[in-house]
View 1 (cartoon, rainbow, N blue to C red):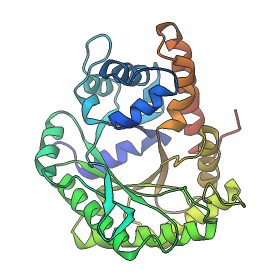
View 2 (view 1 turned 90 degrees about the vertical axis):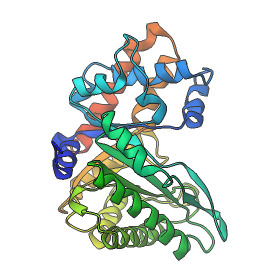
View 3 (view 1 turned 30 degrees about the horizontal axis):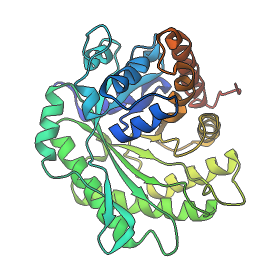
View 4 (view 1 turned 60 degrees about the vertical axis):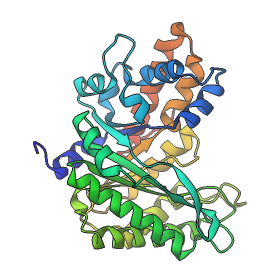
Length: 333
């Protein structure tokens, strides 16, 4: 194996760069395209990826891109395979490997992530195709009497098995237990649930024998539910998030990347900036955004070739703002 898990993880976390989450399923990508009036076709999805992957200067703010299975087999408009496009820019290709969610047995309002069947072979194939990190997402909902202990444990066990299999194949596992923003819960409840979720996860990772120095945590911020009448300030979000990590994330973990998790593009940047200012923990903090980086550019593009330069410029601007926020240096738009 030419590179250690630790080396790859450090490359992904270097120079205040972030990860681009370009791993939307075909259904989710279709929803993005629908917002600009485009049909959900293979070619339109390819053009959607091409818009961002070929943006001039993307490598100055992105260290790795999480790909969808379909995208890994596609090529840029000039015929160059997307994986080669990224590698030529020094961007590490990654791959989403979970199979989505289904209702949790015995608690159908909760979700269980699937995809372990055949994963070992798929990881081996993805490695030969250039993937050096992977992602698996669990979904945790806050509501009446949920999440249950069983939901947290079963999803953590699946994340741990996925991470173990990744490391066997020389692939850095990105573990993503997303605590959803949906609901009326307040900041305190979000902190309690997120802390418990992470404690259960890292207990299972340790039990399964996963090397924590070769893992990246992809986490939601500790944030008020989107229906909560009292919304936390960015400073309150930052304090609660860092306190949560201090109480739940082992110091061996090299880094934590944030999802935007339903925040607007600007909210995600402001929150990241506030967190960066108060982060005194041992972990490198960064971002792994999808909509928060791509959304504004998508509105400009609208599927038209003549709009590509302006759309790419908007994408790079949002990227630069988040790199600045990752250092606590975001000064607003």
